[in-house]
Image 1 (cartoon, rainbow, N blue to C red):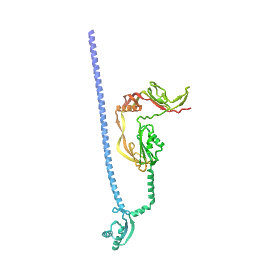
Image 2 (cartoon, one colour; image 1 turned 90 degrees about the vertical axis):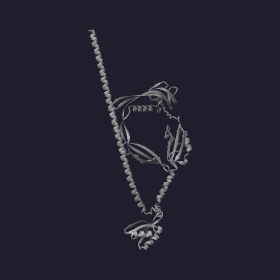
Image 3 (cartoon, helix red, strand yellow; image 1 turned 45 degrees about the horizontal axis):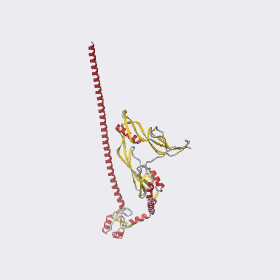
Image 4 (cartoon, helix red, strand yellow; image 1 turned 45 degrees about the vertical axis):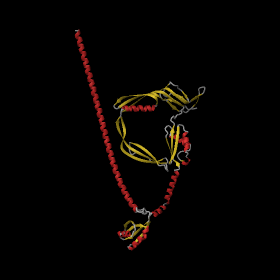
Length: 478
């Protein structure tokens, strides 16, 4: 009886194990099918995105082709318009009342004659007599034409021989043009005054261009130049380039300098010292992080902590307080310090793997804005709602401080694209590392966790040595 019970128990155990294996196999197969369906869905989505991108590319190419054809048609129309304008201009110049023509260019004076009779007969007789005729026309039953002034007697003799009544009109040519211009002497006076103003303006410096500075500000360099008597509105003859170089060389952080004058612009170039560091002086320094102090650099003032101390954010690290022997605060002097410490930082951010990028559509617009004596003449305005722009400035300050800035506007449109979440996490870590400015070796790690459809949570951990002191300036009260 006992043996039968053991056999039955063994059989039940084998059956249970077989059923467990079958369930596990079924679960594994279901998981495989789920992953396969998910992979097919992702593949279909990628194919859809690829088709949409190809469709968008074809649309952009079609738009560019239409724009090219439109520009070509516009250029052809403008060429036809220019040809019509030139033809009309040539006709106007040929009949110019000041005597301009394409044979003598107006240097030979001409006289206008008006005669009765047939225009063909008059032209034939004058040509046979060696008289050059121009601007011949028939008006009110009379023939009008112009001949050279030296051929006037010969032309009159031919008309008398033909028994034609005639009338001598006005004289045309450069001489008459000069008399016309002399009658407007005020115009020449204005031109002369403008030239004089240009000449006087060329003797001054109207703009100072500073380059080569990275740590030093342009305002600091211009202030040093102004203190030496050089700046905008200074006469060129009063500028001593050697003195400018010496003035800039005396500034902290400047290893070398040079300058030159081009047109009405003073170009100043500086070479900064490699070991120059801008130090700010404050009344006290506080901790910007929870940290363990590793190094203390005191230039002035008194440190409130020592190496190895653990400080919290906002704790006072150094100050310029001066006390009496009885412990009474006398005054607060300037403090200059740099305190470093080991910090451990954590950051968290929720991001999406979908991003909106602005791409150029191909439509562009160019605008040019001029500035004179530092004043801008006009203001650039984009014709597009969404755009990118580039600017290029050209100076024409040979006589006047005139600058032309050309703005190129490129129309853009938003498009949604998928981003790699790992690249997003790396970019986030890089931005925090740049913000923290670790010194020497440091630790950096991050973890990505999906939170919802298309949303991820990035957890970043940073550890290393950095500058923890933050300057604080307070006003002491007595």
